[in-house]
Every structure is written in C-alpha cells, then in structure tokens.
Length: 471
Image (cartoon, rainbow, N blue to C red; front, top):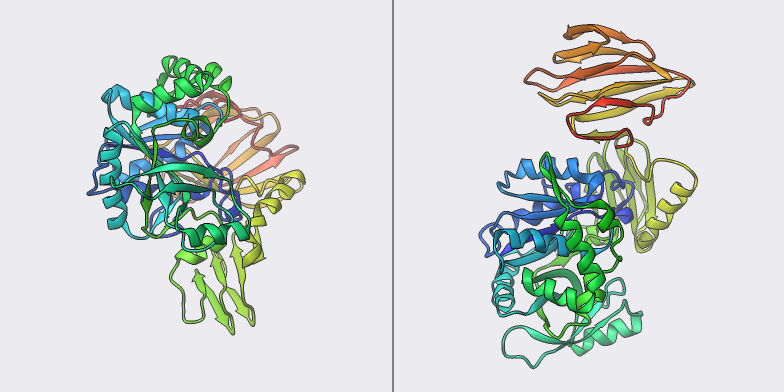
C-alpha cells in the first residue's frame, strides 16, 4: 500500500497562523511535528509503509521538500500540480506515479491536514481497507459521527454487509442541524473523511469511464512530465486544461465499486480553530493555552501566543491568536467565518492573508523587522550551503551586516568573504549574490533603501532552485 498525501491546501480558516504561503499542513498544531509530517508518521508499523507520493502546488514545493527531508522519507516522490484542479486530477497523477512502481499497486489517499487520535484503531482499519482494495473496490473511510455536525458531508451506508466494508446508498451534502440530528440517530450515516484506498489501475479505469476528460488531461500531463531537482513536473498545458472536480463527484458517486469502511479513531479535519480546540488537551476550565499566556476567570477559550505574552481576564468561548503581524479575537462558535475575514483582507489589497512577517524561501527565511518611507529592514537567515539567486534590482540599494556565521558575497566583479560585524554595500543596479559557505546558519541584517522595495523588484540571472522572477 503506497501512501498518497494531498498537500496543496490553503487552510484559510486557521488564519492568522495559517497563510496561503505557509498553510496549516506545514504547522505543528497537534504535536511537535507538522500535520503533513504527522500524516506520514502515523503510518509507521502499518500496512502502508511504502515510500509516499506527495501531490502539492508548485508554490509550496520547497516547504514540502524541507519537511519530507526532515522525516527522512527515503524514496518519496513529490508531484507538482501546475494549477489547482481539485482532488480527482491530483489523485490521477498519483496513481500514474504508483503504477510506475507496480501496475496493480494499492494507494492510500490521505489529506495532509487531518488529525487522528487513536493510531492503533486507524491502522487496523487500513488492514481491512487494503483487503477490500485488492479485491477491486474503491474504498472511502466513513468517520463514525460523534455529534450532529453540519460542516461535513455524509455517506449513507447499507449496514447489512458481512465483509467489514459496506455498500454505499448515497453521498449527502452538508446537512441542516435537523437533518444532522436525524443522521446521527439513525446510525446509517458517516462523516465523509476524504480518505480513500484503491488499486491505482482500478481508479484510473473508473475515472476514464465516468469522466474521460479528466482522465485524458491527466494522462497527457503525466506523459509530458519531467524531473526538476527533487520534483516531478507534469505537463503544464494539458493539466491547466483539465476539468476541475473532486473525486466524489467525478468517480465515487458514479461508480458501482465504491464501498465505505467505518472509522472510529478520534478523527478531525482540523478545519477551524474550534475543531483544533476540541482535539487539544484542556485545563480544568476548558482552556487551551499555547505560548506565553496568563489567564484568569477564563473558560472554554483557546489562546495561541506566538511572540508576546497574552493576558485574558473574565472571558469565555473565545479564540485569541497572536502572531507578529496580526491578532484574531473571535467567538469560538463563529470561527467558521474566519475565511470571510481573509477575503476582506485580500480585497483590501493587504498581504496578511498570504504571508507572515517571516517569509520562508528554499535557501532560508527573512523577517521584515521595520519599514518606512523609502527604507526597509530585514533579518535574513541562510541555511548552511545555501545560496540566493544571482540578481539585481532596478529601484533599491542594499546594505548587509553579518551578525552570525560567514557570508560569501559576489558584488559585480568583486568576491568578498565576510564574518560577524562586517558589512557590504550593494549599489542600485549591481549584479550580486549571497551564499553561506559555512556549517552554521548565516544571519545578516539587510537595510534596503530606494523608491520601490517590493519583492517583485528582483531580476534573476541564475538560481539553483529553478525559480523564475515571480517565484
């Protein structure tokens, strides 16, 4: 069984901790590891021990590669989607990749941003799912509901099966509260988890039969693939032309081979601050306090402090999230609407929906410490052995001061080696690059001055990460 991890989501309902440039699957929300790392780690000792296949968006490739490298997942493959086309095409790409290993391989499709409390129960269900998939079934996992949830779709099952897997009567959209209560009482309905298991060849056959346009576009895209560093780039033109559809609509609701296996393992999609609060350990008054938090006369509240002390007094049923550049205060029962706040931020032309103050790059990261009229100050951290692109700027000059490590600087024809407390000036229009030749992280303070200080004022001439001017 080959794990397929879908990791291209944006996680806007967990703003301001989750941003589109650093979404929730890469954050350590439920343990000391990120959600995508937890997704792979909970498979250890299960039937799904083959090297995973990750499918992600192009703009998240370096974030994912860093976390896969930290896991030490040897043989893992990262397939890049040129555009987001929902789950049916993404899973098709993964199935083509799996067939390269073995024509009748079984794939286990997992979203990268879920939480599962009971790993043993989950792994036991995987054994049954593998058996069902080998027999040619398309398996979906139906979570045994614990409350009348209106935020999930449901699967109505025929509970008379003796195989351990059940036939599916219907896929049901997100219900009203009244319907959700009826579903819970009947015992025939399960939450649609978005997790699947099937043979790669069976899924592709059913996709070709029920949605040939998606199959043809995905196949053409896969056939036009190429390798780029640690990534598999599929054909962009064919994939961009691919219809957008979920696996439920494109295949599962149409095929006669779909079955559901009940899953009772403490599952959560971690889709909101409320759902994250629900799966975390709480104090005696129902609070989840993360970071430097002081709380008095506070109940049923989640506080996540990233950089400063947060003090709460006489409040209840709140979510308070503090980051370097934004603070969210919300009624815990209203947090499904956080995505509406994100849309307002984007519509206002601001950047807080996309980036944190600290921005990650394949070579390291930078933190925008201060900014004013015609100047900007950044703290830049470069990984050992990493190098920024050879570049120039039309509108700004830069002054670099090394505060830790060793910097190799190319400035025009001059090659310089700088250590702590040494500095260099990069005039406007000068071609230059920065490299860390040492064994420890390089940290510099960068002072930019000029008429325009945007990140798009970068003309790249050479980049070891294969990025363009807008990447």
